[in-house]
Amino acid sequence: MVRLPAALERKLQEMFPRIRERERFIARILEEALGQASVTEERPEAVGGTLHLFTDGGSRGNPGQAAIGCVLEDPIAGKVLREYREHIGVETNNVAEYRALIEGLKIALQYRPNRLICHMDSELVVRQINGQYQVRMPTLQPLVEEVQELAAQLGSVSFVHIPRADNHRADALVNTELDEVTSASHVRRS
Image (cartoon, rainbow, N blue to C red; front, side, top):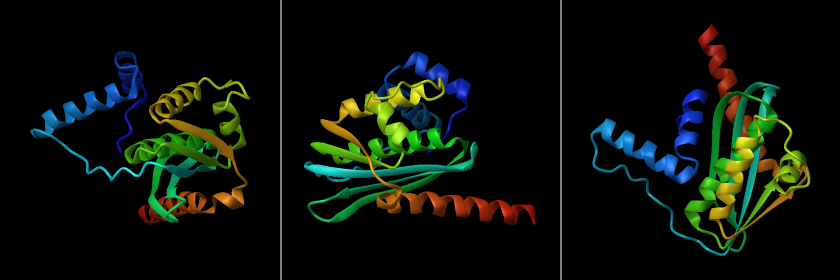
């Protein structure tokens, strides 16, 4: 995933308020730049039913080097459908938590569940998304709106706070990614 400069991202959001429109525009520009008729991503088979999404984001320092982790599972089949982790640069813990949820929702959309239960260990994010807390940080508002837009594309979505111990798989993905970033930066300095 390519992270665009903030000024460019804001301009795209002004031009294309809907995420899908922005993504289509960017895909078209990339296809033209690469000289390809079509860049297609293999889509997973639709699962339907109820899926569980576990997300976590964290930073070492606040702000500091940050990463996200997502685990999508089918509880009926008892299997993990997809795991994802990514280094997202220098961010705060709260931004990382939101970015993890956004990425997890994008992944879940590919499987077209009838119901999605999002499990997070960030009480703040869960309460903000559920409308129990106001979003006071201006930097978080666009992330909240993106979560709401993605959730609207899914049928039924619920956001549930869970203890950190119950989110161990997503947490492990975050820590693995941060460990790799840390070890890579130590190698470059040597």
